[in-house]
Length: 445
Ligand code: UDP
Image 1 (cartoon, protein in one colour):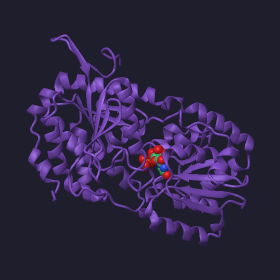
Image 2 (image 1 turned 180 degrees about the horizontal axis):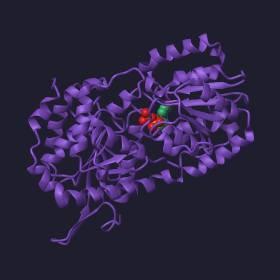
Image 3 (image 1 turned 90 degrees about the vertical axis):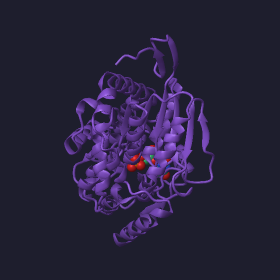
Image 4 (image 1 turned 180 degrees about the vertical axis):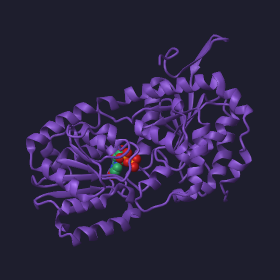
């Protein structure tokens, strides 16, 4: 869709004026500036920060709103035209994601107050994850703004992935209402778009499939020997890598089992990610590796800074993503950007980022045997690996942030237009059931 002038520019045709568009980006439960690789800090944090940076570069004024979880300034300048606003809601300290729901009404009230005191109104509310979507829906309605939502994960989809944890009904109910009321929804893949239609009755017309972006100036292939030295992996043993938030949904136990089935015993398996809250799962995985007789081959390392990860991907022969579900799966794309082939579950966004037999392998079953088989093929065949590596790097150009940012700008244009044409009037006329919706969240504090 062509832009009306530059992206980020608002034109008032009646007054003949131009100004920058203001975006209220909401990331209620987790700060985009938090260290990555913890239990709640992964792909979404990277996405919100990098997208906001790109939009600010394009000319938008972006404010990211997050719950205040420490003794940090209420307003922080992150980059030119980009600020982080910390909103008081509940204790100013980290709390479990599941607990945050009780402080959403306070978050919402304080956001409303902030909106009400702005000299220049926002043009769009863009929320991330259902908790922000809850606040975003109310704010957008009250201030008559278009509301763009990205869910990142969906309760219903997680429950159907059957990895043994149940998402609360409240979440699913709210996701359904947010879907119905949003002006536009960004999905990370066509697959997610279909799921939103299937499980939540989402209107395909309002859903825009835009992949996540990657910093291709950070994620590029480095010299393998230098990379191994840098991450302190001596020797040239085949290196299998896993990276991410260490949680059950990621299926790391499938990888440990697959590694145990390899005929060769000269490999190293490096598992990177997780903080102290992942200690229980790490203990389980260590016990599993011991029981399978591969403990000496397996090493667990806590989360590393994002900027160090290119060295890890470049040092590895293969990166494995055995998740039960991934709405996008940034790690797979980052690995491919560093020229590392990927063996991944055939789920969610991975279906559209990894090309089976070209940039890696996609495994349709959540069991170790097929993972072991493909690992054996790749580790035993340097020429195949080199071909995959070159194809992998070539395949990631479409995830460059400058491309993705413009596509999100198109979504904003479409949302503003849709809101102007019909939604504004319709939404206000339609009964909203605001009280029922608000009281479904049990306020605390
Ligand atoms: N990550 C990181 N350091 C770590 C582990 C993970 O910077 O130690 C980053 C990783 O680079 C990726 C993100 O966390 O950008 C994980 O995103 P992904 O989409 O793979 O998974 P999600 O967290 O969304 O489930």
